Image 1 (tube, rainbow, N blue to C red):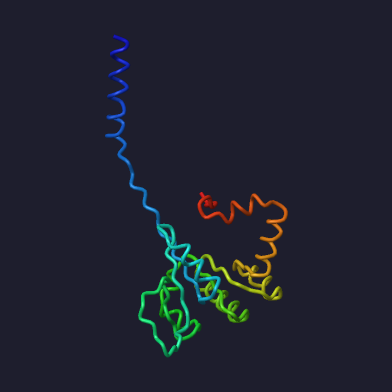
Image 2: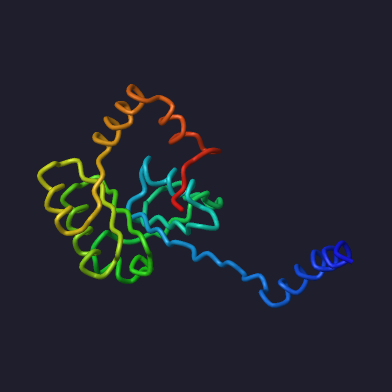
Length: 178
């Protein structure tokens, strides 16, 4: 009888448990990432971020090209007349969870980053190469990166601990925040 009770319990209990605790559907909210400025840094990153976790959009000024290409782009690019706050307010930039500002002009990058932060964007990441502007932006709560400092940090990591570099750069075994 003890064996019969054990068999019935091991079959019956999971069925009852499943009925009382239905499986919840886990729905991940896509993080909207807006890149202001299309360049050799933002375009590949926006392409790599396209997944069920991220919804990247690149905002770039309209290009006047004589050979206008009608083919479908690999990137989701929204063309804007200029990078003024008035123009950006007519787009979906302010609906983004993260805004990355990476234009060629540090002053414009800093101005846009502070204005976006004041408009309520929680995470603003800006490319600044000038150390003078960097400190002031950090005090405003803006996350700052520079190509020079990033390259320097990567080279140092490659020299000091090459295994860590392989983990960071390997696409298949990439580190993800939990």
